[in-house]
Amino acid sequence: MDEVTSSRRTTQKEDSIDELASNAQRDPRTLDETEVPPSPLPGFPRRDDYPKVPDPAFPNRMVSTKQANRPFLKYAEYRTKREAEHAAWLGRQKERAARLAQGDEVGPEEPDPTAEPEVGCLGLLKLVLYVLVFALLAGKFITGSFLWEHELPNFKKWIPTNQRLFSERMLTTFDGSDDAKPVYLAIDGDVYDVSPSRLTYGPGGPYHMFAGKDAARAYGTGCFNTHLTHDLRGLSEDELKGVANWKRFYANSKKYVKIGRLSHPAIDPASPIPEHCDPKKATARRSPEQVEDIKHQQSPSSSVSSEHGRSEL
Image 1: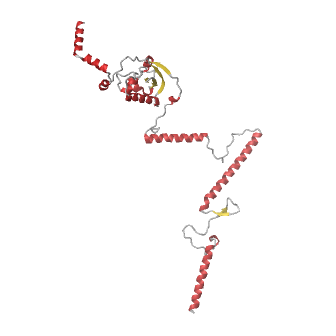
Image 2: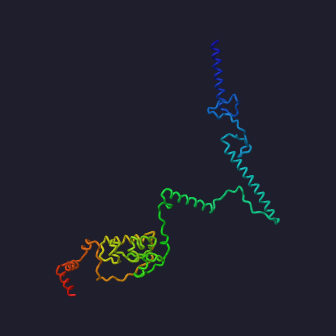
Image 3: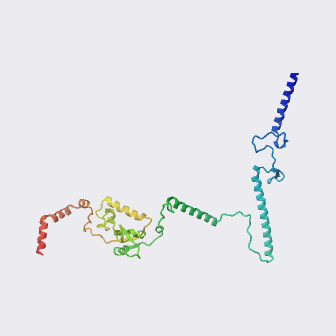
């Protein structure tokens, strides 16, 4: 008797397992409420109880309005609305054309409300303007300079100019004394307009001694009081390099523009070379004849004869 009961229980368990396996293979939407297995995720039932609507892509098929399908259904609704607006606009356009054909007065043409806006030249210019303004403000906020601490190039250098030939006398009139005239200087024959730095090269400025003249020698020796001349005779190799560096500075400057050349009179080869303002360098560069002349001038006999001559006068 016990064996028969145990056999029946085993058979019932096997039938129940087979039924559950069969239900699991079936579509949950075709199962009855009592046959649908519980969902492992709360809030996401296995049975789709959302209303059905026609599929926008295939009208003969019904689709669920569940959360996953709603963006597509909403876009299909938007497209349908836009198509209706476009069709209504076409009808108004036909009506307007018919009234024009009859000679009736009509208002301005109505633009298509469904037309996608195109990015034309005006839109592109606005975008560039917005980006430029943003970059300028960002530079001012970050670096304190609208140009991000960059200097604008001197566009005057790109404009061809008529190079003028100056005489030494003419150049002296551009030393900054006259506010109505620009400030010019020359270095080794090249004339530059330094008016952008009028406070530096004009009267009272630290480099006013260079204005209105060619003081190329002073650029190499640093003798700003005694070497304000273009005479480069007797300069050392390092001093000549210094003059060349200053010439490159003015030639490559973004502020100053070359406007011409300066015509110098010829230098007499027999004229004395300007002495260096540094006594040590001046002594080292003297020739033996110059040293003897200086010693002779400083000798006591020379001093006595000089005093005797003055007493006779």
